[in-house]
Image (cartoon, rainbow, N blue to C red; front, top):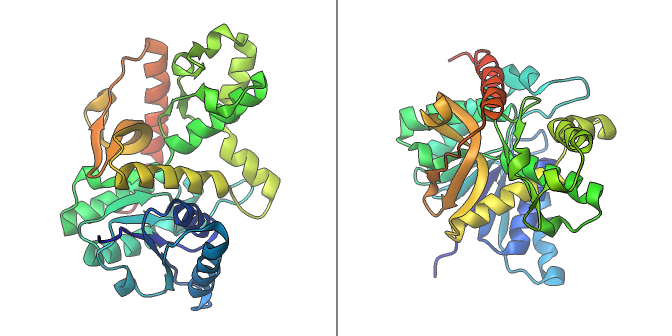
Length: 315
């Protein structure tokens, strides 16, 4: 039986931690690629992870490289390469820096793994996913189903964490849906957020729910400000692992992801966080839920922010 092949582009904190989660899940063999100042760095991280296998009991083969030839014919490519946010820096500040990186990555991925499903993690997320898809579809024939952005899984996990903390319950009992752009105008859907099936509106007063919503929106910035010298990587990489598992195991999971829209939710020609069904062919369905007028207004506001960030792209 042929094993799945997963490439992670970018061996920094997010990329290496993604490799860690994926190795433990034994979803396939992993190629960790980076173009660092020290050419042997990805090889060192890969070897370190492989040497953890006997302790944790996984048989995953992990390769470190600086050569895209080693990534040939990957089933999934996770793109984490790019500059991370620093304190006081918005995701939008990263557009110019990361556009050059994502452009180069997309061309290399399209040439070496033409049948891959690509998961984009680089910020500003929705804009970088749009850029990657534009290049991959135009030059390498990728469909919109095969390019997806990781955002909503992370944002929803943050909201679930805050709900569990507030109520003193297990995170396993919590469910939350966060839609919209991966930024300060994201849209946590309170009426779809539950604990053991009970809407949080029946468990918490409005002021506490508002505080959770605001903390969810600021979740990434909160960690940036605490770390001082970097941004989140444990939770973002765990979210990638869940998406990769849903795809490779054809789970048909409904997860909030950044997807290319062509009229859904009244939006076109942009990547935006919506509920999707993830399976072996990537995004197999975009789920449209009926929004209340105030929710649609929040979604439109979030979309406007994403479009303003996209306008900084030089295409």
